[in-house]
Image 1 (spheres, rainbow, N blue to C red):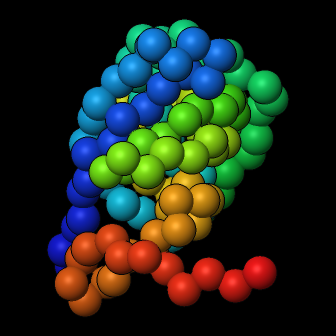
Image 2 (image 1 turned 180 degrees about the horizontal axis):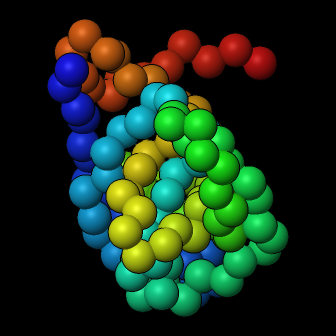
Length: 118
């Protein structure tokens, strides 16, 4: 099975001058975008609440949730994000993908404009 990664710019909505650029794994099975602790700290993101998540192996973990501005190829959206732990992988989840109007083509392993429905 192949993987898809994309470069994203992530900003703090309270201070858009704070920005990081990083490679993210596109995970069409994950709802939330995950920012590892190192990135969340650089952006000075503050948690709004905590949420439990079920992992693919059945474990349940708690992570803090914040908000960020996510930019992909010049298109930017506000998105809820998981403020991850030290060893968490940067993930681009479906909530952010949908907010950007994108969908993952699993055969070509590329992002394409989604057919959006109101």
